[in-house]
Length: 210
Image 1: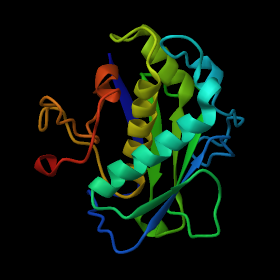
Image 2 (image 1 turned 90 degrees about the vertical axis):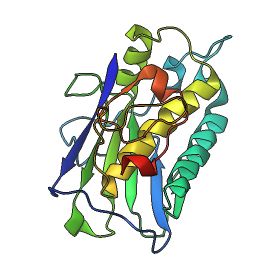
Image 3 (image 1 turned 45 degrees about the vertical axis):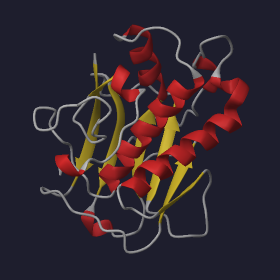
Image 4 (image 1 turned 45 degrees about the horizontal axis):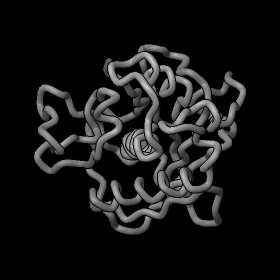
């Protein structure tokens, strides 16, 4: 099963983003009102619905999980040459991207686990991404990698999808699998669809895929 992403963009071409200053990414775990999906009531991510191999759920290690995801997102974006600060809550700094994590299933269906909005004319006024927790849970349950995930697996899944959608808000487009197929540990994070097995693995922006 291939999980999908959506990008709502006012740009027709890929915009190359250079790190000229520190960008601020806010992870909204309570899922405030979304401009991408204004007709849906905010529903926070239900950590208790994600079971961990060996017993328990992500709710048992909620704070540790949130921070591990934050750190991994920063590692992925730093590796792409993007100087970034990732926060869990609103900040006085100018926000580049707000990532809202919700328990919603995707309104679009089709295995879509995340969507993002990028407007090149919006400058640094804060574009938005939404991560669909229920869609991720369903794909884990019914996909080719069905079964309980480890704590580290869940960290990888959420960090990868959050990073993918954040990169959309910074102007990065999809990379067709036919142009840059995964090769061992080299998995391009901006592929137009990943398997759930790939979502549990290390992903990054690969120079060879640009």
